[in-house]
Image (tube, rainbow over all chains, first blue to last red; front, side, top):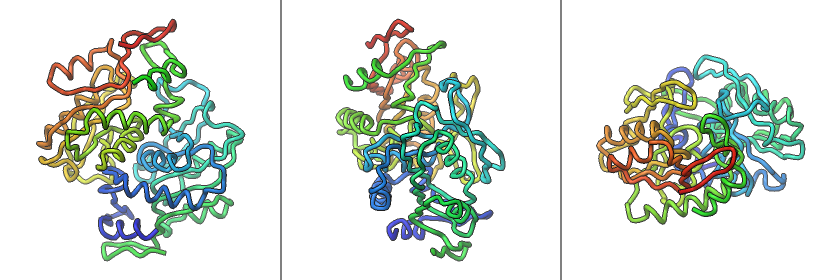
Length: 189
Length: 189
Protein backbone atom coordinates (compact mmCIF):
# COMPACT_ATOMS: atom_id res chain seq x y z
CA UNK A 1 0.00 0.00 0.00
CA UNK A 2 1.68 3.09 -1.31
CA UNK A 3 0.29 5.54 1.26
CA UNK A 4 1.58 3.44 4.16
CA UNK A 5 4.97 2.83 2.55
CA UNK A 6 5.39 6.55 1.95
CA UNK A 7 4.48 7.27 5.55
CA UNK A 8 6.98 4.70 6.81
CA UNK A 9 9.71 6.26 4.66
CA UNK A 10 8.80 9.74 5.87
CA UNK A 11 8.22 9.16 9.59
CA UNK A 12 9.61 5.72 10.44
CA UNK A 13 12.91 5.48 12.26
CA UNK A 14 15.13 2.42 12.19
CA UNK A 15 16.64 1.65 15.61
CA UNK A 16 19.11 -0.93 16.85
CA UNK A 17 17.87 -4.48 17.22
CA UNK A 18 15.66 -4.50 14.10
CA UNK A 19 13.25 -2.04 15.69
CA UNK A 20 11.22 0.11 13.32
CA UNK A 21 9.86 3.03 15.28
CA UNK A 22 6.55 4.15 13.84
CA UNK A 23 5.14 5.58 17.03
CA UNK A 24 4.29 8.94 15.49
CA UNK A 25 1.45 7.43 13.44
CA UNK A 26 0.90 3.74 14.18
CA UNK A 27 1.43 2.51 17.72
CA UNK A 28 1.68 5.36 20.20
CA UNK A 29 0.31 8.37 18.42
CA UNK A 30 -2.22 7.02 15.94
CA UNK A 31 -3.27 8.62 12.65
CA UNK A 32 -6.87 7.48 12.39
CA UNK A 33 -7.23 8.90 8.88
CA UNK A 34 -4.42 6.61 7.74
CA UNK A 35 -6.13 3.76 9.63
CA UNK A 36 -9.27 4.51 7.60
CA UNK A 37 -7.34 4.07 4.36
CA UNK A 38 -5.76 0.86 5.66
CA UNK A 39 -9.20 -0.43 6.64
CA UNK A 40 -10.40 0.09 3.05
CA UNK A 41 -7.43 -1.94 1.80
CA UNK A 42 -8.22 -4.77 4.21
CA UNK A 43 -11.82 -4.63 3.05
CA UNK A 44 -10.80 -4.92 -0.59
CA UNK A 45 -8.67 -7.94 0.26
CA UNK A 46 -11.17 -9.80 2.46
CA UNK A 47 -14.60 -8.48 1.49
CA UNK A 48 -15.79 -11.78 0.00
CA UNK A 49 -14.96 -13.78 3.11
CA UNK A 50 -18.08 -13.08 5.20
CA UNK A 51 -16.04 -11.98 8.21
CA UNK A 52 -18.06 -12.17 11.45
CA UNK A 53 -15.35 -11.16 13.93
CA UNK A 54 -12.10 -9.23 13.90
CA UNK A 55 -9.56 -10.48 16.41
CA UNK A 56 -6.56 -8.49 17.58
CA UNK A 57 -4.27 -8.27 20.58
CA UNK A 58 -3.77 -5.46 23.02
CA UNK A 59 -2.64 -2.79 22.80
CA UNK A 60 -1.41 -1.43 19.51
CA UNK A 61 -3.60 -3.61 17.29
CA UNK A 62 -6.83 -2.29 18.79
CA UNK A 63 -7.06 1.03 16.94
CA UNK A 64 -6.54 -0.45 13.48
CA UNK A 65 -8.86 -3.34 14.31
CA UNK A 66 -11.71 -1.07 15.44
CA UNK A 67 -11.52 1.15 12.40
CA UNK A 68 -11.33 -1.90 10.14
CA UNK A 69 -14.34 -3.42 11.92
CA UNK A 70 -16.40 -0.36 11.02
CA UNK A 71 -15.87 -1.16 7.35
CA UNK A 72 -16.64 -4.86 7.80
CA UNK A 73 -19.58 -4.03 10.09
CA UNK A 74 -18.62 -6.61 12.69
CA UNK A 75 -17.38 -6.60 16.31
CA UNK A 76 -13.75 -6.63 17.41
CA UNK A 77 -12.36 -8.90 20.09
CA UNK A 78 -9.00 -8.06 21.56
CA UNK A 79 -7.01 -10.80 23.22
CA UNK A 80 -5.80 -9.72 26.64
CA UNK A 81 -2.26 -10.26 27.74
CA UNK A 82 -2.89 -11.44 31.28
CA UNK A 83 -5.75 -12.62 33.38
CA UNK A 84 -7.62 -9.84 35.14
CA UNK A 85 -10.40 -9.89 37.69
CA UNK A 86 -12.80 -8.83 34.96
CA UNK A 87 -12.54 -12.00 32.89
CA UNK A 88 -14.19 -15.15 34.13
CA UNK A 89 -12.49 -18.53 33.95
CA UNK A 90 -14.03 -19.64 30.72
CA UNK A 91 -11.30 -18.56 28.31
CA UNK A 92 -9.14 -19.77 25.45
CA UNK A 93 -5.46 -19.18 26.12
CA UNK A 94 -2.17 -19.37 24.26
CA UNK A 95 1.39 -18.67 25.29
CA UNK A 96 3.25 -16.04 23.27
CA UNK A 97 6.91 -15.07 23.28
CA UNK A 98 7.53 -11.34 23.18
CA UNK A 99 10.77 -10.55 21.39
CA UNK A 100 10.37 -6.84 22.19
CA UNK A 101 10.13 -7.45 25.92
CA UNK A 102 12.18 -10.63 26.11
CA UNK A 103 9.50 -12.58 27.96
CA UNK A 104 6.58 -14.95 27.59
CA UNK A 105 3.01 -14.00 28.27
CA UNK A 106 -0.39 -15.61 28.04
CA UNK A 107 -3.11 -14.28 25.79
CA UNK A 108 -6.73 -14.83 26.64
CA UNK A 109 -10.06 -14.60 24.86
CA UNK A 110 -13.34 -15.29 26.58
CA UNK A 111 -15.00 -18.39 25.10
CA UNK A 112 -18.24 -16.47 24.89
CA UNK A 113 -16.98 -14.35 22.01
CA UNK A 114 -15.36 -16.88 19.67
CA UNK A 115 -17.78 -19.49 18.36
CA UNK A 116 -17.52 -22.39 15.90
CA UNK A 117 -19.59 -20.48 13.33
CA UNK A 118 -17.31 -17.42 13.39
CA UNK A 119 -15.22 -16.42 10.38
CA UNK A 120 -12.33 -14.52 11.90
CA UNK A 121 -9.98 -11.94 10.43
CA UNK A 122 -6.94 -11.21 12.60
CA UNK A 123 -5.69 -7.63 12.44
CA UNK A 124 -2.38 -6.47 13.89
CA UNK A 125 0.10 -3.65 13.47
CA UNK A 126 3.29 -5.71 13.07
CA UNK A 127 4.36 -9.14 11.89
CA UNK A 128 7.96 -10.10 12.59
CA UNK A 129 8.59 -13.47 14.20
CA UNK A 130 4.92 -14.36 14.08
CA UNK A 131 4.59 -15.17 17.76
CA UNK A 132 1.47 -13.09 18.42
CA UNK A 133 -0.16 -14.19 15.16
CA UNK A 134 0.54 -17.85 15.91
CA UNK A 135 -0.99 -17.43 19.36
CA UNK A 136 -4.07 -15.68 17.98
CA UNK A 137 -4.50 -18.38 15.31
CA UNK A 138 -4.47 -21.05 17.95
CA UNK A 139 -7.25 -19.27 19.88
CA UNK A 140 -9.36 -19.28 16.72
CA UNK A 141 -8.59 -22.93 16.17
CA UNK A 142 -9.37 -23.84 19.80
CA UNK A 143 -12.76 -22.19 19.38
CA UNK A 144 -13.50 -24.27 16.30
CA UNK A 145 -13.92 -21.02 14.36
CA UNK A 146 -12.60 -20.41 10.84
CA UNK A 147 -9.50 -18.30 10.42
CA UNK A 148 -10.03 -16.41 7.20
CA UNK A 149 -6.66 -14.72 7.29
CA UNK A 150 -4.57 -11.99 8.84
CA UNK A 151 -4.37 -8.34 7.83
CA UNK A 152 -1.10 -6.79 8.96
CA UNK A 153 0.00 -3.19 8.69
CA UNK A 154 3.77 -3.75 8.55
CA UNK A 155 5.51 -7.06 7.91
CA UNK A 156 9.21 -7.34 8.49
CA UNK A 157 9.64 -9.79 5.64
CA UNK A 158 13.28 -10.39 6.60
CA UNK A 159 12.06 -12.05 9.80
CA UNK A 160 10.48 -15.51 9.66
CA UNK A 161 6.88 -14.92 10.85
CA UNK A 162 5.21 -14.27 7.51
CA UNK A 163 6.83 -17.24 5.80
CA UNK A 164 6.05 -19.48 8.76
CA UNK A 165 2.37 -18.59 8.84
CA UNK A 166 1.93 -18.78 5.05
CA UNK A 167 3.60 -22.19 5.01
CA UNK A 168 0.92 -23.33 7.47
CA UNK A 169 -1.75 -22.22 5.01
CA UNK A 170 -2.72 -18.96 6.71
CA UNK A 171 -3.58 -16.17 4.28
CA UNK A 172 -1.41 -13.26 5.43
CA UNK A 173 -1.93 -9.89 3.75
CA UNK A 174 0.51 -7.18 4.78
CA UNK A 175 0.02 -3.61 3.60
CA UNK A 176 3.75 -2.83 3.75
CA UNK A 177 6.38 -5.57 3.51
CA UNK A 178 9.88 -4.54 4.48
CA UNK A 179 12.59 -6.44 2.66
CA UNK A 180 15.46 -4.85 4.54
CA UNK A 181 16.12 -1.90 6.76
CA UNK A 182 19.07 -0.16 8.32
CA UNK A 183 20.04 3.31 9.41
CA UNK A 184 20.75 3.89 5.71
CA UNK A 185 17.17 3.32 4.63
CA UNK A 186 14.19 1.02 4.27
CA UNK A 187 13.53 -1.20 1.25
CA UNK A 188 10.12 -2.72 0.55
CA UNK A 189 9.46 -6.07 -1.14
CA UNK B 1 -26.84 8.57 26.77
CA UNK B 2 -29.87 6.38 26.45
CA UNK B 3 -28.42 3.88 23.97
CA UNK B 4 -25.47 3.13 26.24
CA UNK B 5 -27.61 2.90 29.38
CA UNK B 6 -29.94 0.47 27.64
CA UNK B 7 -26.99 -1.61 26.53
CA UNK B 8 -25.57 -1.69 30.05
CA UNK B 9 -28.94 -2.81 31.41
CA UNK B 10 -29.24 -5.49 28.72
CA UNK B 11 -25.69 -6.89 28.60
CA UNK B 12 -23.85 -5.62 31.68
CA UNK B 13 -23.27 -7.99 34.57
CA UNK B 14 -22.64 -6.85 38.13
CA UNK B 15 -19.95 -8.91 39.84
CA UNK B 16 -18.50 -8.96 43.34
CA UNK B 17 -16.17 -6.13 44.30
CA UNK B 18 -18.06 -3.37 42.45
CA UNK B 19 -17.10 -4.84 39.09
CA UNK B 20 -19.41 -4.08 36.18
CA UNK B 21 -18.69 -6.58 33.44
CA UNK B 22 -19.35 -5.03 30.05
CA UNK B 23 -16.90 -7.13 28.13
CA UNK B 24 -19.44 -8.22 25.54
CA UNK B 25 -19.55 -4.73 23.98
CA UNK B 26 -17.07 -2.35 25.59
CA UNK B 27 -13.75 -3.70 26.75
CA UNK B 28 -13.06 -7.17 25.42
CA UNK B 29 -15.49 -7.63 22.58
CA UNK B 30 -16.11 -4.16 21.19
CA UNK B 31 -19.25 -2.97 19.40
CA UNK B 32 -17.80 -0.38 17.04
CA UNK B 33 -21.26 0.77 15.93
CA UNK B 34 -22.05 1.68 19.52
CA UNK B 35 -18.64 3.39 19.71
CA UNK B 36 -19.65 5.44 16.67
CA UNK B 37 -22.76 6.67 18.47
CA UNK B 38 -20.72 7.44 21.60
CA UNK B 39 -18.23 9.37 19.46
CA UNK B 40 -21.06 11.56 18.13
CA UNK B 41 -22.11 12.31 21.72
CA UNK B 42 -18.57 13.29 22.67
CA UNK B 43 -18.44 15.48 19.59
CA UNK B 44 -21.66 17.24 20.55
CA UNK B 45 -20.25 17.89 24.01
CA UNK B 46 -16.78 19.09 22.99
CA UNK B 47 -17.11 20.30 19.39
CA UNK B 48 -16.46 23.97 20.22
CA UNK B 49 -13.22 23.23 22.06
CA UNK B 50 -10.82 23.01 19.11
CA UNK B 51 -9.47 19.63 20.22
CA UNK B 52 -6.05 18.87 18.69
CA UNK B 53 -5.31 15.53 20.40
CA UNK B 54 -7.24 12.75 22.03
CA UNK B 55 -5.40 11.05 24.87
CA UNK B 56 -6.29 7.65 26.26
CA UNK B 57 -4.62 4.77 28.06
CA UNK B 58 -4.04 1.24 26.94
CA UNK B 59 -5.79 -1.00 26.39
CA UNK B 60 -9.55 -0.67 26.62
CA UNK B 61 -9.68 3.08 25.99
CA UNK B 62 -8.03 2.80 22.58
CA UNK B 63 -11.00 1.64 20.54
CA UNK B 64 -13.38 4.34 21.76
CA UNK B 65 -10.62 6.95 21.44
CA UNK B 66 -9.83 6.05 17.82
CA UNK B 67 -13.44 6.13 16.70
CA UNK B 68 -13.98 9.41 18.55
CA UNK B 69 -10.84 10.85 16.91
CA UNK B 70 -12.34 10.18 13.48
CA UNK B 71 -15.19 12.54 14.32
CA UNK B 72 -12.86 15.21 15.76
CA UNK B 73 -10.41 14.70 12.87
CA UNK B 74 -7.37 14.60 15.15
CA UNK B 75 -4.77 12.01 16.20
CA UNK B 76 -5.00 9.74 19.24
CA UNK B 77 -2.17 9.19 21.68
CA UNK B 78 -2.38 6.25 24.03
CA UNK B 79 -0.40 6.32 27.23
CA UNK B 80 1.57 3.11 27.66
CA UNK B 81 1.61 1.24 30.92
CA UNK B 82 5.27 0.37 31.06
CA UNK B 83 8.45 1.36 29.37
CA UNK B 84 9.23 -0.70 26.29
CA UNK B 85 12.25 -0.80 24.04
CA UNK B 86 10.29 1.07 21.41
CA UNK B 87 9.94 4.30 23.37
CA UNK B 88 12.96 6.54 23.78
CA UNK B 89 13.79 8.22 27.08
CA UNK B 90 12.09 11.50 26.38
CA UNK B 91 8.74 10.83 28.02
CA UNK B 92 6.25 12.26 30.47
CA UNK B 93 5.36 9.80 33.20
CA UNK B 94 2.86 9.45 36.01
CA UNK B 95 2.25 6.75 38.59
CA UNK B 96 -1.20 5.20 38.66
CA UNK B 97 -2.81 2.85 41.15
CA UNK B 98 -4.79 0.03 39.58
CA UNK B 99 -7.67 -1.01 41.81
CA UNK B 100 -8.58 -3.81 39.39
CA UNK B 101 -5.13 -5.38 39.58
CA UNK B 102 -4.16 -4.20 43.08
CA UNK B 103 -0.86 -2.66 41.96
CA UNK B 104 0.84 0.52 40.86
CA UNK B 105 2.11 1.10 37.36
CA UNK B 106 3.71 3.93 35.44
CA UNK B 107 2.08 5.51 32.43
CA UNK B 108 4.19 7.06 29.73
CA UNK B 109 3.67 9.43 26.83
CA UNK B 110 6.46 10.47 24.50
CA UNK B 111 7.17 14.21 24.83
CA UNK B 112 7.15 14.46 21.06
CA UNK B 113 3.38 14.01 20.89
CA UNK B 114 2.08 16.33 23.63
CA UNK B 115 2.96 19.98 23.07
CA UNK B 116 2.14 23.24 24.87
CA UNK B 117 -0.20 24.30 22.05
CA UNK B 118 -2.28 21.12 22.25
CA UNK B 119 -5.89 21.11 23.40
CA UNK B 120 -6.42 17.65 24.76
CA UNK B 121 -9.55 15.58 25.26
CA UNK B 122 -9.05 12.49 27.40
CA UNK B 123 -11.23 9.51 26.46
CA UNK B 124 -11.59 6.39 28.57
CA UNK B 125 -14.01 3.54 29.05
CA UNK B 126 -14.43 3.73 32.84
CA UNK B 127 -14.17 6.27 35.63
CA UNK B 128 -14.29 4.89 39.15
CA UNK B 129 -11.62 6.05 41.58
CA UNK B 130 -10.15 8.41 39.03
CA UNK B 131 -6.60 7.06 39.25
CA UNK B 132 -6.03 6.69 35.50
CA UNK B 133 -7.72 10.00 34.72
CA UNK B 134 -5.64 11.81 37.34
CA UNK B 135 -2.48 10.31 35.87
CA UNK B 136 -3.46 11.27 32.32
CA UNK B 137 -4.30 14.83 33.45
CA UNK B 138 -0.89 15.19 34.99
CA UNK B 139 0.77 14.15 31.71
CA UNK B 140 -1.17 16.89 29.93
CA UNK B 141 -0.22 19.37 32.60
CA UNK B 142 3.47 18.34 32.49
CA UNK B 143 3.45 18.98 28.75
CA UNK B 144 2.08 22.48 29.27
CA UNK B 145 -0.88 21.50 27.08
CA UNK B 146 -4.51 22.43 27.81
CA UNK B 147 -6.81 19.78 29.21
CA UNK B 148 -10.19 20.52 27.67
CA UNK B 149 -11.94 17.74 29.52
CA UNK B 150 -12.57 14.03 29.77
CA UNK B 151 -15.12 11.97 27.90
CA UNK B 152 -15.95 8.77 29.75
CA UNK B 153 -18.17 5.92 28.67
CA UNK B 154 -19.24 4.66 32.10
CA UNK B 155 -18.80 6.51 35.38
CA UNK B 156 -19.35 4.68 38.63
CA UNK B 157 -20.73 7.77 40.32
CA UNK B 158 -20.81 5.99 43.68
CA UNK B 159 -17.01 5.92 43.62
CA UNK B 160 -15.04 9.12 44.24
CA UNK B 161 -13.18 9.69 40.94
CA UNK B 162 -15.70 11.86 39.13
CA UNK B 163 -16.30 14.14 42.11
CA UNK B 164 -12.56 14.41 42.76
CA UNK B 165 -11.73 15.43 39.20
CA UNK B 166 -14.65 17.86 38.90
CA UNK B 167 -13.65 19.51 42.18
CA UNK B 168 -10.25 20.15 40.63
CA UNK B 169 -11.95 21.96 37.75
CA UNK B 170 -11.73 19.18 35.16
CA UNK B 171 -14.75 19.01 32.88
CA UNK B 172 -15.83 15.38 33.07
CA UNK B 173 -18.60 14.20 30.75
CA UNK B 174 -19.76 10.63 31.26
CA UNK B 175 -22.21 9.04 28.86
CA UNK B 176 -23.62 6.71 31.52
CA UNK B 177 -23.41 7.53 35.24
CA UNK B 178 -24.19 4.67 37.57
CA UNK B 179 -25.69 5.76 40.88
CA UNK B 180 -25.77 2.30 42.38
CA UNK B 181 -25.49 -1.29 41.30
CA UNK B 182 -25.94 -4.72 42.81
CA UNK B 183 -26.92 -8.17 41.68
CA UNK B 184 -30.49 -6.83 41.90
CA UNK B 185 -29.96 -4.18 39.25
CA UNK B 186 -28.30 -1.02 38.05
CA UNK B 187 -29.57 2.50 38.70
CA UNK B 188 -28.37 5.50 36.72
CA UNK B 189 -28.03 9.06 38.01
